[in-house]
Amino acid sequence: MSANGYTLGQLAELLEGSLRGDAGIVVTGLATLQDAGPTQLSFLANSQYRKYLAETRAAAVLLTAEDAGRHDGAVLVVANPYLAYARLSHLFETRPAGAPGIHPTAVVAPQAQVHPSASIGAYAVIEAGACIEAGVEIGAQCVVGARSRVGEGGRLAPRVTLYHDVIIGKRVVIQSGAVIGGEGFGFANEKGSWQKIAQLGGVRIGDDVEIGSNTTIDRGALADTVLGNGVKLDNQIMIAHNVQIGDNTAMAGCVGISGSTRIGRNCMIAGGVGMVGHIEVCDNVFVTGMTMVTRSITEPGSYSSGTAMQPAAEWRKSAARIRQLDDMARRLQQLEKQLAAVTSGNDSSSDA
Image (cartoon, rainbow, N blue to C red; front, side, top):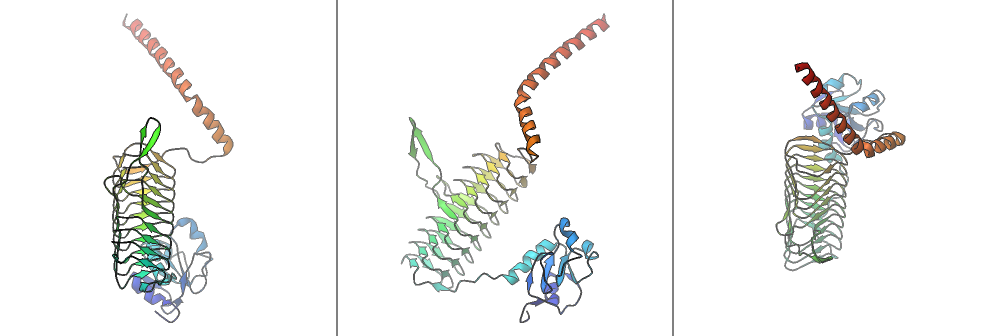
């Protein structure tokens, strides 16, 4: 690294890419094609932004071999520009790292274990029996409940709450406002009155998981709620009690998963999807935005429900026709019966 950034030669070596241009050009940051300045690196990952290639002021652009010929400036040729951008983004991370040690205002129970290399922020609370492993960062005002564990290299942004008996693997990142291990929605009805069910399970989260801001993951009623390795959750997601999510599944914002649902590995759940409880979703399923999943999915593939956006006047006409479908179906059945009768009569006449 130079005093002010990274040279294109250094970045090309890091990415194992092919450089076309001056290897000594220094890059100080990343930006979009439209906004990049002469010391910033950009990328093209979506063809709809190809039109900005000719106008960009970027020092260089991450491009595929196919797109490299479309740009006259410096180019770093890579197989996957978006992945290359993701890798380089960490070089320019500006988030301050927590210093090892316990802030004077933090409250750490004598029975808690905190590794000397961990960072415990201001006004954080670490309860009895909790374990904070090496290199963990606990942000300001976080709560780590009794007997909970945060694995090596993990990071809790400010104001994350872990209830008791929450076990978190290595290198897990949890953003502000997330609540892990809250009580699931469990009640039994007795003559119209709801009787609370104690939630006796915990939460187990694998390695390399990321959990977005204000996402909630309820503890299990009896067994644990479980997230596998590499799961990625966006902001404002609701995971109910006893849900199980397989390795490397990703969910966009505002998804809601009802209790005891099992989701397989390598699934992609788009924004606003809802899933009823006690169903199973197999591996390698993609569910498009705002879909309501009301039954198990047993075959990999893409699934959707609902209607796509259209002009309001057209939508009102469609909604009116939907209300008429039942009557239309009955009339169609009657016509089919009449047609069958006529056809049968014609066949009898022909035989005679």
